Amino acid sequence: MAFAIVALQGATGSLTLLYLQRQDRWLLFAAVLLLALCLPRLSPRAKALRGGPPLALGVGCLMAVVAFAGHYAILSGYDLSRDEQMATFDAAVFAQGQLVAPLTGIWRHHAEALNTMFMYPTRETAAWISAYLPLNALIRTLFGLLGDAALTGPAMLAVGAAALWGCARRIWPDSHEPAVVALLLYAGSGQVLFNGMTAYAMPAHLALNLCWLCLFLRRTITADLAAMAIGFLAVGLHQPIMHPMFAAPILSLLLLERAWRRAALYFVGYAIIGAFWAWWPNAMWALVESNAMAPKGEGVDYISRLAATVALGDGIRIANMVPNILRFFAWQHLLLLPLLSTGIVLARRNRLAGALFGGILLTVGVMFAILPYQGHGFGYRYLHGLIGNFILLSVYGWTTLSEAQALWRSLLLRTTVAGLAVILPLQAYMAHASYVVPARASERLARSEADFVVVGEDDAPFVADLVINPPRLDLRPVRLIRGRIDPELARALCAMRPAPLVAFAGEGLLRPIRAYHADGAPTVDVEKANRAVAALLRSQGCRTAIIE
Image (cartoon, rainbow, N blue to C red; front, side):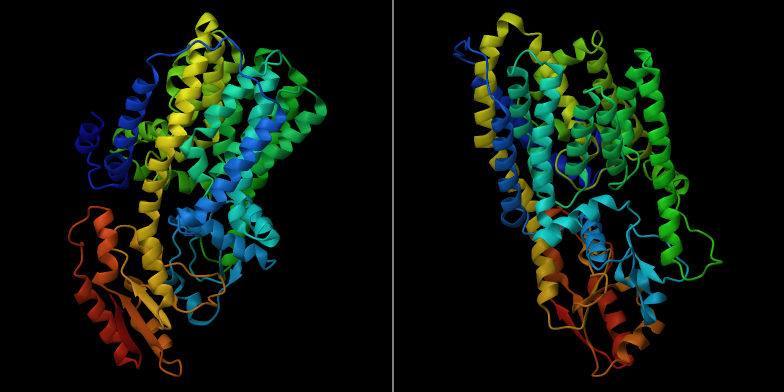
């Protein structure tokens, strides 16, 4: 059915369909099969599952170690998507003690050749930085100073595990079992683990949301002030709407409880937070635009960004959102969905459960309207910050099982072991396959002896993401987008002495990328396009070559 929806809505050939074909349908099939195999001959387990804070700490630390090792062993130490690349780029800028990285010389007028996707639009470029909010990158900067920025995601996994434990103990103080159940569902989530290997902001969103909820549930002025500090960080991670969609339904409980002082405190706090982060993009644009009289381009402020984003989703919302939801559950614990369905029923009668479910519905509805296409990522990234909601709702479902809990305990332990032994290795294989091909292509570009390498952005799917440059352009080869090389840039490049070597990404390098994406012939004649630009460069004195 999902395939039919995608095809009828015109999303065939998209990354959404590729993931559905290559990964999610097999994961869902394996999940159903494993669940069926775990059901027979269940022995009732009368004794409740027990554990304490050391269990949460141990699980979190173990997941962190696996995620850190997986960043290099599974994901090849590579930033696949532009989102990941921008987090790494911004962190490198911040590590130099700067808010933006200055551009000089010819690059002020030809910055787009360096790949400025997801950066602030400019007329005359004085500097460059991503258009994302800065705190995910800033956190990565801090971990980079401690040794390795790749520790950021794993650290967020450990913080998330501890915060989830704290939330469960606050909601169910009379028993440790709900917290243990929550921790097992967290540990069995491939989405949590594999996104923790990346530079995405999503692991931090989940960890900070759970910390926020744990503080909110304490109901003290000190905890509320700390929660607002966490909220400031969460809103400023990368996109400002993600945390408010989680927090708003929970904060609405204050109105239902007539807790007017707490409600006023949070209202004022979030008004200040919102005003600050609304100001931030305008301040950054003023630093990257050298022409003070230039009008702001589309994408500087959030209103123009929203309008452009909504336009991108026209006509393919259902075709993307249905596979997104399937992908989300394909990368979760085997029992999350069965327990969740029970917990949702309770959401009608329990205000906190209803608020947790409300955050899920709000996020799905908003993302369906403005950005149904998620691009790269493990599971459904835009619901990542609400995985805690899903887990806690599932634990609500667990608490309603009464006498059936004895059998469900055995089923939970069986499915957890089965997921860790079968599903997670399968997901690791899929994750490696999606990263290793572009990682190898990028490595071949990096190893070339050229001064510049040129990639055609339409030569293969997502191949423009190979055009990654450090903020100071202090590594060779500098990578360029072929379609952005004009005679003026060619003259400036080839005027360097000795004459620079410019290498082009050829068919041999691009073919494996197309093969992974099941993409046949390119939309352009790669060899002809390369020859045309190479001729221009040679006419100006450059040397040229092809990387096959």
